[in-house]
Structure formats: structure tokens, C-alpha cells
Length: 365
Ligand SMILES: Cc1ncc(COP(=O)(O)O)c(C=O)c1O
Image (cartoon, rainbow, N blue to C red):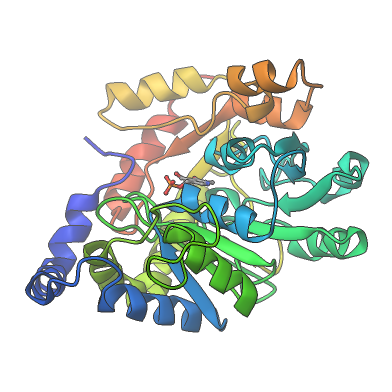
């Protein structure tokens, strides 16, 4: 069986270092906001050449805390992509704001900046681009629109730790960058985890306060906050993995190149990388008209595949009920009908890629 992600191989490689880090954290017994959380925050900020990083419980909360820190709340509108995981838009709804969906670019699967301005209203407060599958969104255009209209930019970097746009890491263009450390993410821990990065001292202070019950000074509470701290043991694991993230992303890129070389010239639309972008291939996602045939052939050969995402957010029951019938967003709908993601992780071998691509090339379209 070739799975979508094989965390066992990764753990086998890092076992001695991870076990040691966990052992030390267990001996220290500072389980809530202990030294590993503080050091990881410094290290993630330094990686991004930013002044602040604030750990939190998961990537969803990273987005929630960022929206709250920017003062977004009931009646506000947040512009985002319909082609993403639910969490991106769910957080706006959780705080009484409305997610407004803008169609995507067919080559990158990311929000199409040319379609954003038509959706801006006096209630719009922020743009939330997602660097989907590890490919950076078009940050120059998005930031220019945000600046012109006085909007916050909250980057959803859950799938793109280490991806760069014009040589600069994603998460550093907007007011905040929000990351998930869900185990299968390209930088993942062994449970839930997340982090918010920012160059703004006031925003960092607000996120820190909100993640800890709205409290900057113990037992004094100035806001309704959350219990959303990054776990100390997860931070210890992440500190082992962080120094290897660029290498891990390089391995993903090499695997993507091998997939592309083997699949070129067929009836399949391969993922592309725009000039000046460094895609980190959190997912390797094809577009193919009859994806079920491909998925079935792969399954018969013991190879996993997955559809991220079968239903774009403007077509999800929850948002149709909440917001009423939504206009068609044809590119997102076409992508949702045709995408298929293949196994992708740094330890995937050339032999496995050959097996996978042989199966696909033998499918009769
Ligand atoms: C694009 C995107 N945003 C947000 C999240 C939420 O992250 P988490 O699962 O850590 O809450 C995820 C992943 O799960 C994601 O893929």
C-alpha cells in the first residue's frame, strides 16, 4: 500500500531526536506555555525574519485569533477563496462575520485577485488568501488591493510552511500569517498545533492575550478569549522538525518534478508553479476529467489518492443555509469536479513514484 502520507517513515528517521526532546520536556514538567513553546515561537519568527510568532492550539484557532486580533466581528465581511478547507471560512462565521467567496485561478487553485474588488463592500474588513496545496497566492496583487481599500490581509498558510513568493516566505506579506501543525501538514506535529506570525507588536500581544482566556496578566481578563495554547510536547516535536523544513520541502519538490516528468504529455493537467514562486507541494494535485477511473485504477494497485476538495465552500450546506443561494463560481466548481491528489511526502521513493505513474499512464481515458 502506498498511502497519501507516511508518518511512520518520518518518525523512524527522527525517532532518537524526537524521543530525546519529549523525554526532556516530560522531565521539565512545564506543560503549559513551557520553554519549548517560547523557543519554538522565537525560532518560527526568526525563520520568517519577523519579530513575533504566537503558538496556539491548531490552525483553525490561528485564523480565529488573527481575525479577532484585527477587531473583526459581527456584521463584518471577510473575502476568501471557496476552494479550501472549511476552517478558512468557518472562523469568520464563528465570530458573526460573513465569508464572501471569490473565484480562483485555474493554474494555482488560489483566489483570483482580478475578481476581488467587485466583492468589496463598506463592510469588508479583510482578505484571507490561502496558499493552497503549498503554492503561494498572488500576494503583490492581493496586498495592493488591501492597501487601496484599507483591509487587513490574514494569510492562511496551513499548507505552505516555507513556500516563497518573490523569494519571501508566505505569511510575511499580510498583517498575520496563520499556520497549522496538523500531523499531515508539511510541517506537522503529533497532535494538533498552530501558530500566528506577525511583524506587529500590538497584533502579537492581542493574539497572546486571546489565546489565554483574554488575559495578559494572570487572573485579570480584558476580553472574552479562548483556551488555545500550543501544547509543550508538540512544540518539543516541532523544534526537531523545524530545522529540516527546507530540506523536506526540497524533497517534496523533487518528487513533484519526478511525477511531472513521468506524466507529461497525457490527458492530465499537472500542477504548475508560477515564476517567482516556490511551491512546497503539500499536495500534488492533478486535474483530470474522469478522476474516478484514475482513483479506481490506483486503488486496485494498492495506491491511495484523495479529492481535496469535492465541494467548494459556496456550495456547502452550512453556508447555503446561512447565506442563502450563492452565485456560481465556475473555476472553483470545475476544479472541485476534476482534482485528484496523489501520495506526497518527502520520503516517497523514486520506485514508488514510478509505480504510481505507470498505473496512471495505463488508464484508458
Ligand atoms: C487551508 C487550511 N486552513 C486551515 C486549516 C485548519 O488547520 P487545523 O486542522 O490545524 O485546525 C487547514 C487544515 O486542516 C487547512 O488545510
